[in-house]
Length: 633
Ligand code: ADP
Image (cartoon, rainbow, N blue to C red; front, side, top):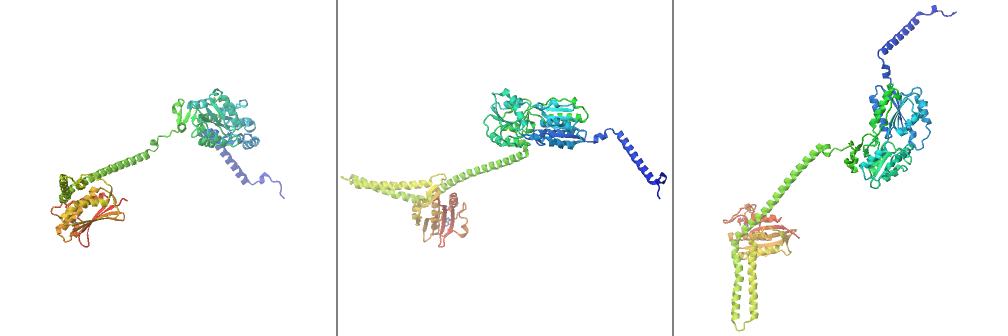
């Protein structure tokens, strides 16, 4: 049977093991204790400081969001301890008719029960009021920094020794003075402000503070409009009006406006400049002026927080309310609204100045300039070349006219017989008729009718002689190249008239068959006649040289498609096959006294008329020269 267990009966091994473990644990504890004693403060440094940040409207609600962001960033930068920052938002401030706060208080209570934060930072007036109201219940004994709160909204009655206030001071008169200094013609200020209780409070404060400006400025309040209506009004403001962006948390329609979207929308449609006294709204939408400086408020708030976390008593710290910082302006807005920089107060800072295009795009500008320079060089080169070509063209026409003139003189010898013959006929008739008339006048009763007829004949013969001389002079006249609308049948006909007597003298049958239709071309008639004369004389030369039996030169004009043609065919021996390609070359001649310039000049003249000239041999013998000119109509 088993009796009660005695000490003697306990086996020794397990006891020894337990004692060993105990010994090890104790020595480990002693060692760690010694280590801690050797590094004082190590435990406190590794333990994070718990910071509770309470927002008034929301974590992205301007202007407070920008202050909160800056405070957190600076706190993290300057804190010697690791930080555990927790953020909460007092949503009730967002509503025009705030609901009960109790559920939120309950929530925070259960969250921080038994593990209170080391410090509470409230951002904005509603958050300050909340933490003051519920500190006993939620954070007994926790130090608080009430920051970004306007001095008028600080509940001083409920401040304790554990509180530090970093207040700001709104100076609406200074903000409006700034508007009047920049835009002295301003008559009306439209104030954009929401409809939450806080915004209503501020509307009254602005009205009160701006009393000194009564009579100088009309204030228009947009507080009872929905934001959409505000946009409509802002897009159609009368001249000399500016917009003052007070605050737009909740509009009259109960719509909450977070961030700066509302302001940006207003900026997009407004036909007047927008002013604000809050730096978080500056940089894109507002003109600027004296504003609350985010950096200064953050720096003071973080000063207080670090001193408190380091163990200093909050009651020892006092901060004066922070006024507006030195004025800042947005260069883009100054330019947009034509505000002169000379109107800005001394010491102003101008931001967002766009560097001149030359600085921003130096390389691109250099490249563009280089391209422009190269282009300009090319263009001026081309213009110069074009001018040179025009001068050369005019000169070559001039030379051509001169050459044609010289060539015409060489044909004068040839024409002399023809002219003398043509002049002889009328002059002979005039002489005969005059002698007859004289005889008749000597009679007792002269037949006056007959004498009248004789005189008419004399006049006609004189005109004929004059016409011969006129034609000769026109062909020999030295005139510059001058193209005009001419009728080709007549032009060629006149040339035939000049050379007909030469043909007769050479016993050559010269025929002319003009086209039935009129042939209008653009050309210089004297030069075209010169070509025709030349070709006819060449044709007669060929016939004479070979002493041909059949001695005919047939000139004709015709219309072929859109071209007028002049054809000069002869019954001479034709052109040797090897010479066909050379006859238009300058100085090519097969005649002992020839110059070899006639056909070269003819080709140049025809080409100056945008036409062509070709030489060919006819199947039945003889040469055929064809000139083609573009028809005018
Ligand atoms: P030139 O009459 O001074 O010789 P052209 O330039 O008028 O100069 O003529 C060049 C050459 O073309 C002539 O020498 C001649 O050999 C040839 N030629 C011109 N017209 C005819 C023609 N109708 N028949 C044969 N040969 C011709």
